[in-house]
Image (cartoon, rainbow, N blue to C red):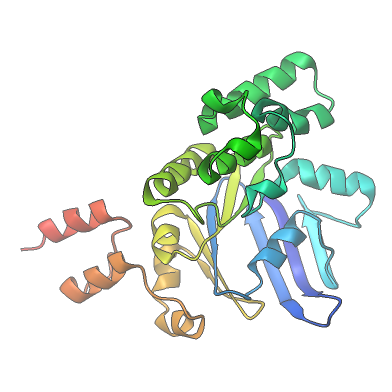
Length: 273
């Protein structure tokens, strides 16, 4: 059974000014994954996200939704956006209602759900993102971290199978960055994939099931965190570093059974005689 939500086959995207942002990308996003997309500025991450949501259309290549080729009819784009939700780096670009509650229920209303269904999905989204105390407030009065949680709640309420987040921890202090990642960890399950971009190799290494490395518009690595971050030549070419946990473990042990977190690192080091 094909568990692919969306996939690209030989996709290239060129902007009107002639800039080629993505070059011959082939990629399949499977259900039930936590995926981190990393790469330096200009690698093509934002363009990839806009293609996945149907905001942009490939210059070349094919795009599939659950195995069916997208031809970009209005009906297909509507179906795509019900399956693929995107949270932009700047939440102000998608918060526009007079209250948080109205903002979160905007999507479900457009899905023509019943009043009871709308209320149920909105309340569930509010609970997951811990935005209950904010629901009557105007979004523009909120802090950046609060706005990001509200934007995520609005996408959750649509029930997408793929949630895309562009730099979800950007601009947040360490406490709220950790809180954001805990929310995303809880949201991911066997029926929902979370795909996020980040500049933090440490966050990507500890959180994700899969890592995708983009460099100059091409996918140069795609696999498990350990497999990707062991490829030091690719990291160097892509202007990336190894996660500090891997570096410390290699330096102290010369072993390759890498821990995935600070806690695992301490456990493994304490067991070495």
